[in-house]
Length: 177
Image (cartoon, rainbow, N blue to C red; front, side, top):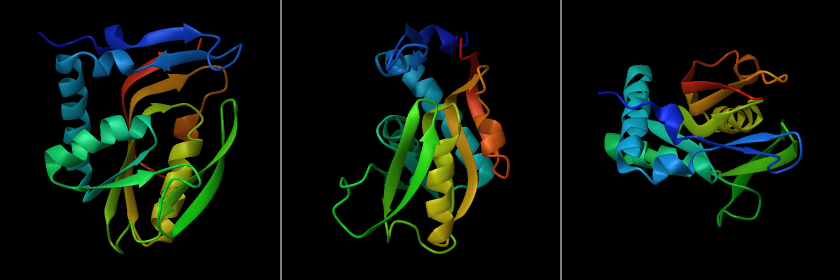
């Protein structure tokens, strides 16, 4: 019997600020069967697009990207906030559904010709994934896709539109309200 992965998503109204319905993926991590299923689905997509590397924005992109990279024997590229990576970095600013931010990547993280799949927990506006993709491309890599556990729709959420030039895969589609 297949798992209904929506049962492992908690909805938290008013977090991190009023008017936001936060979709919490930590119940997936707390259930080994659900976590294994999500990892398998993301790994299957990574194989389909021919990924040779996985990039994941902190911190929830680490939760899902690292096990996929491990499963497939691929390198993992951490995408972090400023000041969190110890070597020389590049950075990219972006907007998100409740503010703006900046992400960084080690300057030597991507090798020219790497086929990089960006994995994160949630697609809302697409800003984080787009910023990650821009850095991959600046370093000579090819973004072969962007994969998410959840894709939000409604309330002006158009992450798929923001990422229009990339192949986008989401396990679940959920309303933002």
